[in-house]
Image: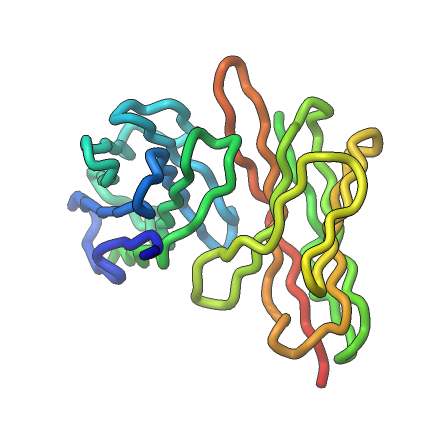
Length: 113
Length: 113
């Protein structure tokens, strides 16, 4: 069974721009969660989608948004990029909600200049 | 405030020794506990999960859970240099009607040949 895939793997943007990241979960997994990982803050939960609905949300500003499609694929959008948004963005999928084991994708490394 | 605490390390052990990694959490009502391994520049990889008090063994790995004392630990027997990585403890907290997976900051393990 193929694992979680994320595109693109690397991205360079400038302040003020916006970015869209994509995640395809493991086949059969309907829950997709997004995380931001930085050296200073560690791994922080952004939000979770299940059946095209946002079910859980972390403490991030409204510039961070996401959506999930009927095939469970998910996208995350960050608008008006700031230097502090430079991070590894990880997507994880699981069969149900966050009670279940999550499997991570390889991540998208975003650099904001 | 839901918290997961880990000693950042590095924890240095000789090859063949037992490495003991510890994690404490703040919410007595937490139900699910996970250990992930993360190599530098890679995404987290699930090692084990544990739901019930006591020990759970999988190969060289043993997870131990003590809900009364609110700690979970990971023992790695016969440590190998390839085990050198950061180990992340994650705890599933129930908040209102939803769940959030909170990660500790990780313990860096160094296995010396």
